[in-house]
Image 1 (tube, rainbow, N blue to C red):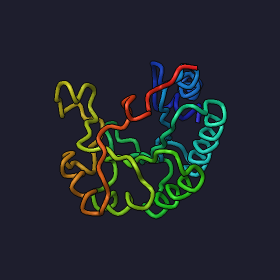
Image 2 (cartoon, one colour; image 1 turned 90 degrees about the horizontal axis):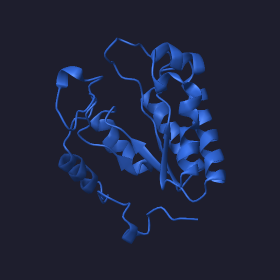
Image 3 (tube, one colour; image 1 turned 90 degrees about the vertical axis):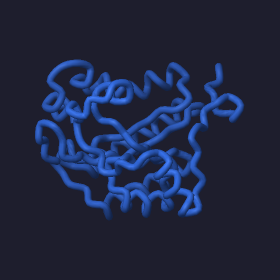
Length: 192
């Protein structure tokens, strides 16, 4: 994976594999309430190894920083600027199996499914094990502050607006929650 990072990130902090690998540890040491993990599936030659390593990392972090909450996402490499082809392919069936495996491994962990996936797929997989989704995502630098579609890194597959995603969730009997981190909800970081 270290060689893979250096191949795709030619300069900057993203090139430093160990800096990135240690980031969740630094977040845990800082007492951050929620720590997100995931591997860009398809970037390396074995998505299975990548997912296994994310699971191992999650279990290690949970043991060490037990006060933090955790989330895991499963972003699959999409056609993007620069034309990077996936080194390994994970089909939808394999993605569902992976999501279910993580739900069994860590029932309390937030599992996220991004707009990289199709609306059809997301609408059907969310009720199985997903408890966090994005909507109307921007993939260009500064995309939420200053819209420059020509800088888009890749096109999200699900381009529905938040209210459309919320309606799709409600139609399946799920309750959209927009914010769960306020202190009055009992979810703010606590000092030791």
